[in-house]
Image 1 (cartoon, rainbow, N blue to C red):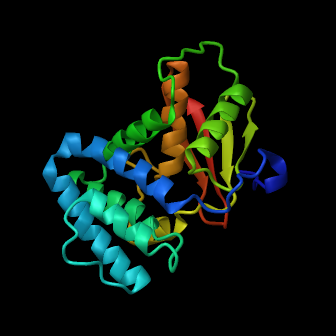
Image 2 (cartoon, one colour; image 1 turned 60 degrees about the vertical axis):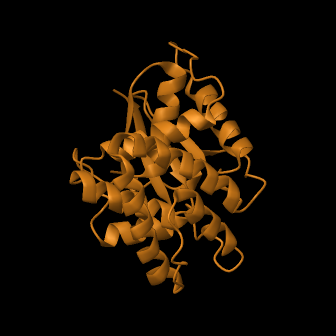
Length: 234
């Protein structure tokens, strides 16, 4: 495969913030985790908190308070240390991937459930149907919504392909610390092959909510330092 470069992509205007405000990301992430909790039950949240404690202790070198027992308390703690560790919310992504692997043996279903919850929260009109898919318009809506919600990547772009798919690029993903640790522990493998990408999964679910079609992705590049995924209609 030809190596993709930033110059190959149509880039959107940069987000007005370098990193998402911690409160914006954690609020949306907790909403996503609550969607998964409906499928797994209370054991899901308890494992999330256990894995979050491990990540914070290892990556940040700070032991979370013993009285953290809920997802909301976990979010409050991550926000409270954001002045010292501005991307501490990577702990949420790591905890999610780790917990899903523990509960279901790397089937990937949990991540998709979480992505659906994430996208539904973002999308103000989830019943929109666009049978004649205009990728430029679709991606513009995705970018606008993401920026307005407050969790956009500073830079984001795309490249349309002749087969109707689209390559999306995250030049520098703000949860990559969590992904790197997941990768090192073998937690990112998809049952269909390749690697998981939480953001690419959310993109696909957003596309589904607006078009009515099923979408999937393949991660083409990870941490080079950019991440690039190919999103396609199934």
